[in-house]
Every structure is written in C-alpha cells, then in structure tokens.
Image 1 (tube, rainbow, N blue to C red):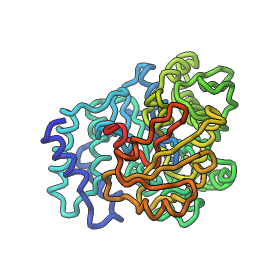
Image 2: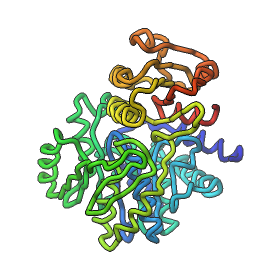
Image 3: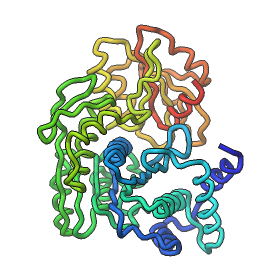
Amino acid sequence: MNNNLQSLIIQLESSISPNPKNNMKRVSKAIKHFDIDFSNTKKIHVAGTNGKGSVSKYLTQILTDSGFKVGTFVSPYLKVFNERILLNNQLITDEDLEKYLKIVLDYNKKLEENMSFFELLTVLSFLYFYNQEVDVIIIEVGIGGKLDVTNTINYDLSLLTNVGSDHLEKLGPTEFDVLSNKLGILKEGGLMITTLQEEYRLEAIKYSKSVNATIKFVDKPLKLSNNPLSFYLFGEEFKLKMLGDFQLSNAALAITAAKRLFPSLKLADINKSISNVYWPGRLDLVKKDPTIYVDAAHNKEAAIALVEAIKSLYEGNKIVFLMSILRGKDYNGFINELSKVASEIILTDFPDPRLADLELISKEFEKTHYIKDFNEAVSNLKDPDTIYVVTGSIHFIGYFLNNY
C-alpha cells in the first residue's frame, strides 16, 4: 500500500459530519449525484449482532462460484482496509481503492454539510459495484439497520442473524429496541430470512405484518460431526471448513438465502462452494505448536458461542485467553462467559484510542490479570499443552496477526 493511498484512508477515517441525523439524506443525495442505479442488480442486505461477516462470506462464495459477478461490502477489516470491499471474493485493488477514495473525498469537499466516514465508505462501495456492473451486491449493515446508511436503497432480500447486547448505548436501552432497529431493514412488501432466537420471533412476525412483508425463520440445523463441522439441510449433508457450532446457523441462513433468491442453484454446487469457505478471524487456528486460535468475539453472545465451540473441541484441556477490550463494550458479560472454561485470562494493551482501562477491569475478575506490554503478554503463549485463544476485538486480533 503506497503512501498516497494510506493518506487517503486516513482522510476518510477522520471524516465526520456536523449533523449525524441527516446521514440517510446525505447518502441518498450522493447516490443520486453519482447516478447509481441497482435496478438490474440483485441486492442482499445482512444485519445481526453476530455472524454477518460469515453469512456474507458464505453467500459470496456460493454466488461467485455459480458464475455471478458479486460485490460484497463488509466491516470492519482484520489486516488491511481493502478487506471491506470485495469483487468476486477478491479484495478491491489498491489502484481502484485509491481511485474511488479520491472521487468520494473530492465530492465531500464540495458539500455544505460534510459526510461521515461510514457514509462515504458506503457510497464508495455502491459506486464501485455499480461501475463494475455486478450481478449481485451483498451489503453488511454497519450498526443496527433501520437508520444505517446501507438502508438507503431497497433490497431484494434482507437477512438477520441474531440479536444481542452489542451497541445497546446507541440502539437500546433493551434488546427488544435493538431488535426493532434491525428489523427496520425489512421494508414494505419485502422478504426477510432469519435465524433469530425463539424469544424474538413473535415480535418479528408482528413487525413483518405491519409492513405487509414476508418473514421466514431458519432453525439451527442438527450437527452431525465436529471437525469437519457437518449438518443436514434440504436433504443434503453439508461440510464446513470453519469451526464452531455458531457456523451451523450462519451457513444454513446463507444456503437458504441463495436458494430463495436463485432457485435454479443446485444443492451439490452450493455444498462444494460452502465447504471451501474460510473467513479469517473466526475460530481461526493460526499456530499449531503451541495451539493458538484467534476469534473476533467481542460481546456476550459471541462469547457464549465461542465457549461452546472450545468445549466441543477441547473438553478437559487448559484454556488461556489473551484479549483486549474497547470502551463501551459489555466486558462483564463477555469475561464471565469466557471464565466458564478459562484457566487464565490475560488482558493487554494495543494501539487504539478507544482502549478501555484494562488494569481496572482485570481487578474485577478472579482469573484475569493485566500485562500492559503486548510483547510481554504474547511471550506467555508458549505451553504446548495449553489451548490459547486471542479474542476481544477484531481490531485487536488484527493487531496480533500483524505483530505476532
């Protein structure tokens, strides 16, 4: 990545708007300005507290392998900024990223009311996909759904994974408020497929009726084996490369969505595609001696799923977590869940202005201690008989992978 591109990314990331409430209007205006028209494109919108990235990745693989030209917009990234925007499952090139950054940043300079980072990034991805003449776009929601700027266009299919406690400060105060916000991606006469938890389904049905829309629920399929993870769906046995029981629901949602939007797709072809999907940072084995996994879990619901996966794979083994936490996260629920299988939890710093007071947090939990220096903390990951899991934030595991 050249210095000019890095400078443009910094400009984008530092972009703020004086009036956040006008975010939808600004993005709609930009779409009109650039004459972006997706009327001949199949559009898939993906929301949910956890699993959005995995569902988007499964769908991208299935549809790309099926011969469609697919644009995918996800966030955040693990190692490089380009990961946010994919064309046919490949990262946007540095050249194209630089080209489109210049376009949207120049546009922003001419506005009386500037756009924020995520608004500009959304417009950039829309413009890039439109100019690439893609057949399908898969767009991951930033936060929530109803008032997220990705919701400025109409979609052929809305997907919702689950609802949890993430972003309660913005979408709450209750998880039902979060649900209401995420259900907002389902518009008048639209179609939603969801793996939503049972306790929220009645509310989802009520909402779908209020907007004259259709909602279809997908249950978590029965697991057949652990490694490889396998399950039955539509009379077919599917095998996954990715680990963790939470991938059962993610894969089932993606398969159901692909078949609903493109009924002619053959299950055997979908099976072949889905068995090859690898999504870095999701219970991802990065070293075998000692055994080190990285996982992007950062809230209570993700911690529950991570603990379930670790128990199924390593029942009886010593488990040590290395993690960092950003301000505003429900660290109590997160650490309490990890403590159910952890022998030890190490908290450490990494360069991020949003870093929580980890020393203070470490004093609240029996198995947790704080090592300020990242390199010193990492030097503890050396016992060949221990299973190590690096987690807490996708930004932290990205830093770990780039610096370990």
